[in-house]
Structures are given as C-alpha cells and as structure tokens.
Length: 222
Image (cartoon, helix red, strand yellow):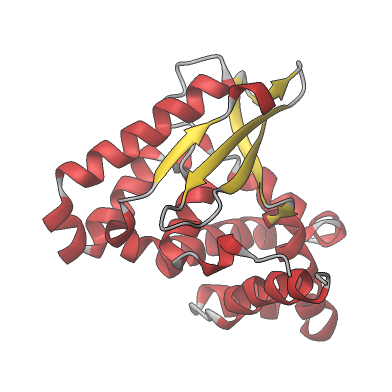
C-alpha cells in the first residue's frame, strides 16, 4: 500500500511545505528563491526556538513576514474556488481570500516550532521552468528509515516576481483537493456559508480536505 507520508507529518510541517517559499523575492531564479526562503525561515525560528515554542503569535509573524509575500494568495484562492470565483462578488472574493489565508495560518502555524529538525533538499535535476511557469522539486528527509517525501512547488510570474500558486506532495495537489472539498460545501450551502465558516475558524473544513486526500491515496493502493 502506498503511504500518504505528507499527511502523516504534523500539520505545522505541512504548512511549511505549502508556504516555505519566496520570501527572498530578489532572486530571479525560482530554484534559488526556494532555497533561500527555506534557509531563512529555518534560521529565524531555530535562532528563537524557545520563543517560538512559547509564543504562537511570534511564529505566525515569521510566516507572514517571510513566507506570505512569496505566495500568490489571490491566485491560489481563485484556483480553489474555480467557477465559483467567476460568479462571486468583489466582496466575496476579498473575504474568501483573507479568510482562507487566516485559516491556514491559525490552523497550522502555531506549532511550527516543534518540527524544526527536518531537512529540506532542493532537487535541481528534477526542477524545470519556462517563461510562464516553474516547478521546483524538493524532498523532505524523514529519517528513521522512512522514505523521503517528494514535494513540488509550482510558481508563476506575478507582477514580475515568481510566486507559488500550488504545491504537490507525492503527486497530489493542495489546490485541487481544497477545490473539491470547498466545491461540495458551496453546492450544499452556498459561498457565503463557506466564507462564514472560514471566518469563524471552523477547522472541520480544512481537516476534511486533508482527510479526503488520505482516503483517496489509501483507496488507490493495492
């Protein structure tokens, strides 16, 4: 049976996999951007490990300062909502984007300091880019006899800077899975209800999305 190793990781580390990205936006090479950003985030948190473990707001602040500037949050939100984005009002788009960002930060960022012992390697030979998109391949060194976790970051130019718009772990898309889960919620209860649940900090939506990936992989293995 194929093991869904990235979901077996602690949730805060999953956020790091998703968002430990182009804080070093000065670089114009996506591979170098990823390398620099991972090093920068790890260095900051490891240098303040005691504070990071005791002060969740400090960790969230590091994520907002070092990580979010390199993520195309609006583009990711647009991909997650898909056709519902086209039908949404400007206010709904803004509310969803902000609520989705805060949900991820609050759900996963607060425990990041507990998982700073993992090494992340950029695999240049598996990375590629053209003028429209770049894919930067990395692997998480799991240790303890476990196979390394393969994670690909997808970036595209936004206003002249490379920014991440999706992440694939073991071939499974973060954006695609959240799109499927949120689409179900919208079809049942409407976009406003989805936004309100996110704004209220309803973690069930995120947990269900993650569980959905696990079920898909486990059911597909033999």
